[in-house]
Length: 287
Length: 306
Image 1 (tube, rainbow over the protein chains, first blue to last red):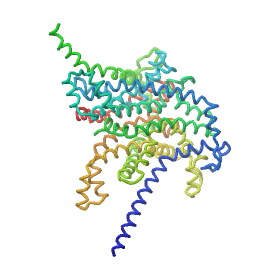
Image 2 (image 1 turned 180 degrees about the vertical axis):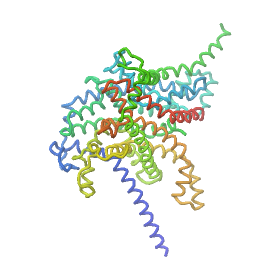
Image 3 (image 1 turned 30 degrees about the vertical axis):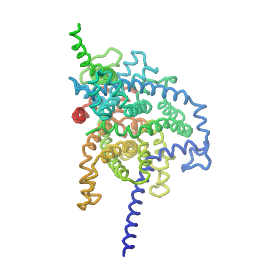
Image 4 (image 1 turned 45 degrees about the vertical axis):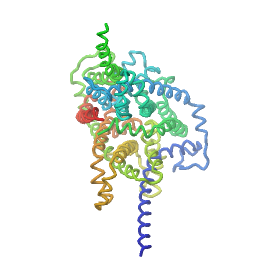
């Protein structure tokens, strides 16, 4: 009798586990399949690329497309451009957003709600809306097709979101009492900002920095308008160029480029995953 | 002199919040607020942006509103954001439930599920374009082998049947978008679920409520604030959607996948009709203004909360 009940419980638990992992597996395949296909295509020998029906896993892996990426395409130039632009963007974006985020999180002053409202509003405006006039402004300043122009665009573009995230971090990173006691000890407001707030909110700042890096790294639309010449072209546009330029016949090459362009984003994201998520749920969508 | 010092110091102290805020405010005015207003003004003018402009009133608006394409695109955009929200949220909630229990490999699955969200849109578009290629598609391959279809589906090429905004290319693109958006919903729901006090569930278990009832009567009500604000934000973002519609299908075929953002982009940078682009922008903005105001008000409530 007892063993019967035990067995029923065992079966029930196995079924439960089974369904659980089956559902997880389905979502897993959905999430990762494009990567599987990208990897397999990038490793296919050229003659298998256009095979019908498609070859899922080639019997022999061929690294020729990866060699092509480096030898026949300006991949390294674009990579360098993207790395440079995203890094400098991150630096300035964080510098500015730390100030405004801190100001909004710690002080109460006249016009605070209006300013914060403006920051939020910019997140809701369609991205293409300011793009046209902004392009003309940059054009008039002779900043199209340069590092300065695109860095300026990404920095100013990222400020709002980074401010919102950092505002949340500063609020929750440490208790106000620390600042109050520092004030009593004679620390000025700037002193508190530099010596207490910044060091204590460091994990949040790092996460936000990664976010702004990804913002610049993943962007397509701004760079497609602002940096059209080869020398300053960014990687995301390069991937798009390669695809339309070479077509399906050179799909392996394009897929290899895409995969290589994604790896930096994925590595950075894996570092910041936890903080990014908590920052997002605190800064952007806290109900 | 000595007497003045405290008040000078006070002035310096009082100005600190403003001084800190100035660079950020300049930034958003420079890149966003001023250009956005310029774009709206653009809708009331003829000629190119740099040339001498003449005020033409609502002429550009009437031209845009007379386009059949415009109404199709408007319908597409509403359908696109609504359908994305529904499916991405359902999938996101299912994923969050699965990840909320202490099963082995939880962290691994969570990381993998987030990958679609951080994939550069250009790269995602590139792969999905291949996955949807009529002859090379592995999806068609599977469906053909299983005997579910007789001829390969032209995922992005075939607009032959259409019911309102519904068409094969639109549904294909929705799949891409759900793939991209569901991790965001998942992570928001998961964060909300994890902040629910475990004692609610303990009490409910003692009272004899099963898992499913617990979900609908405890979890859902308690995650509702976060869920609704995420839906609002994501709804606005999806209404503004550009990337996949443009990068995968360029809004085609026959405008079946075109959203308003794509139309603005094409009007401005392919047809160089900045007036029409501005007019569409104005319409688009007026569609999101009500949810946007609501979202901003909700967010402003939280700013003084700790």
